[in-house]
Image (cartoon, rainbow, N blue to C red; front, top):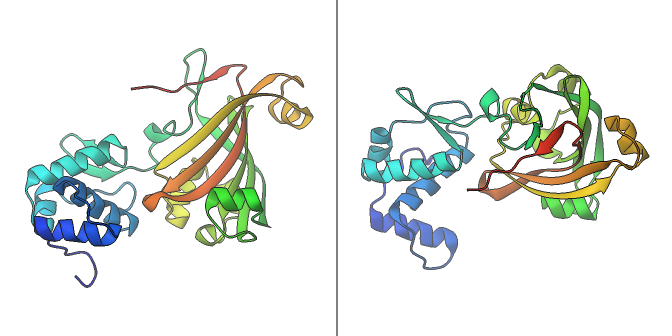
Length: 261
């Protein structure tokens, strides 16, 4: 078990591995233990975003379990949108570079139903030190180096979203205005391609606010107009926070859509 790429466990050993990792004697179904191992491989970068993972039969041999157990683990990861099944092609690591994934985290949709491409326009990018709130949100020490990005998201050349984005500096070393201006996709696809940081889930808090002078000028609305204030924390593998953003959303021609299952 030198490099973690040829792990071979019996059910008992897998349970013991889970217990040692958690520090307490707990039972986890076998497929959940395989899911944990797959997540470890994803976190380690063994399979990059957009790449195919090994077949179910190959993974079954690798972990010395049945194909059905592997399939159940992959099914959960697919339900969580970490993996994408493609009929007749295999299973792939989800990527923000896929246009179909663009609205995975962005829940703002046009009220007329005509989905149009969005354009991210960077306004500023600078280095800062984490104050109490960013430090708490990103789980970094107070005073830790950060990168702060201000940008607008445009639809049909109109500013619809204004974001202030806080990132821990070390994982995003080298991020600057030139890089932001040169990239034509989403910010999350940039984070994947240039820094190997894959955002897999996000938590948002939404509330209604009135546009102040700065917000009205940025989004082209009257001062005092209703806006949505959206605060988001985005996480990579291992539930590690990698981004904290605060945004103002104009709802003149858009609404916030959340599907409940």
